Each structure stands twice: as C-alpha cells, then as structure tokens.
Image 1: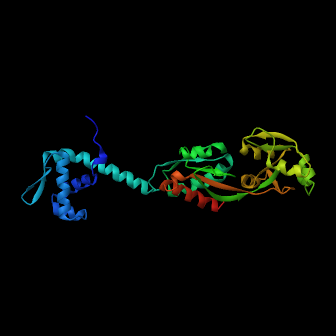
Image 2: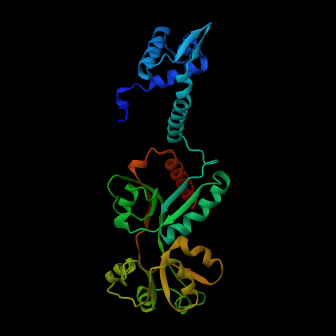
Image 3: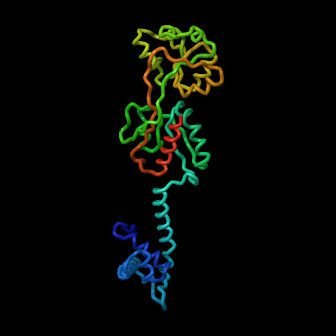
Length: 305
C-alpha cells in the first residue's frame, strides 16, 4: 500500500478530531477552535470522509466516539503532541533545564580568555548545558558553520566567510614578556635594536618563523633570531619564565602569569596594530533560540574581559 499524500489533507482536521474527542460536543469544540458551528460540522464531515467512518455519533446530549475513533485517537494525539513539542523547541530555549551541547570553534588563546568565565556563568544559569571546544583552520571556518559542526567561532577574522555574521567582542594588543630579572629589562629603555638582538620564541600555526612583529621590525631594517617556534601558545609563559628568551604575546594571556612573579611584561619598542577578537556564526542559525542565548552570553562575558 502506498503512503498517503499528506499534501492533499488538511492537517487542521486532526486538531478538530482531538477537540471533538475531548469535548464530545460540536458546539463546544467549535468555540474552543474559534469556529462557527457550521464550520465545525463541515470539519466533522470531512473527517468522516477521510477515515470512512462516522467517528462520532450523537447519543443523548453527547457525541460519542465510535470504535474507529477510539482506535485512531492515540496515534493522532501522539502526532499532534510531537508537532507541538517540535514547534515549541524551535521558539524557546530554557538554559535552566536544557541539556544542549554547544560546539565552539576556538583557539588556545580565546579558550583561555573566554571559557573559564563562560563556565562560571553557566554554573549558575545553565547547569546542564555542555560545551565542546573545536580547533579550526580559518579557511575552513565558513564550512564548519554552514554544516553546523560548530555553533560559533571565536578569533581574529579579517574577512567573514560567506553567509556568516560577525560581531566584534574585544580589542587585543601585543606586549613583550621576559623572565623576572632578565638583562633586557635591567638595561632600562629597550630600543628596537636591543629587542631584535635578544633570542626569541614565536607562536605560529604556519610552521614558519615569521610573525607580525617581524613585519614591523623590517621597517627598521632589523631582523630578530627566532630560537623557538611553537603551535602551542599556552606553553610560552612557562618557556619564557625559565629561559633568556623573550616573546611577543597577546596581553590578556600573560597578565595572570605576571601576577605570579615569574614574568615581567614590557612595552614593545616598536608600534604594532591592535586587532579585534570577534564572534562568527552562520546566517542559518541566526534566529535559533539556543544559538541566540549562547551569543548573548559570550557577548556579555567579553564586555567584562
């Protein structure tokens, strides 16, 4: 037997059936559905034609369901309930009860800066919500968002991928760090020449030894020695605190380590441009209530960073 073509059926008839079953009265059912009694009677007639059964027969003052009506009632009720739940879930998101899992595209840096505060907030307002942090290549972030493998992406994005929305979160800038008591600090004023002469460490994902600071030094006709390159940003404070290397690092990453009296932060002797950390999401999820809640939480957190 072939499947019934639902496009030829008015699914509002199922709602009329459900109300008739509950009220056992055409008049009362019509009032509940804000219909006139003739319209409700017409709906009952169409139901009888659809199911090839009387469905409801007047006995005394009530419309009593037939055996066929009682047989199909559980299935119709379950189907309508599923539809209502689906529509409700698309309209609302309750963080207090939700067990939703969010996937956030994030680097070591943005994870370090944002996620501890995110978890602290959610411990109070969304105790059952879960998070997955996912690393990403910038040239693939648009595809990850479109395929909904991540809900949002955090980072520095010069160009937004297609069909995405970008929101600035906070501005960041570079500072220099060295171990406590490093000779470069004891010399007093640090010149570009002194800075370039000190062996350095560099965070890079490109597997080369050229960073933004090298482009600036080139304007001074200077070249530094990069003694160590690493794709792991968070090891730099530990490396620098136990060596004579210096490095250039985002300011928010190093402040907690400086408070432990193992590192010194110094102002760079050359001017570098600040950059904006932003949040990206797909236009496909722009109106999704869960995604909206996540974005609002992240925006609120970053305003206080």
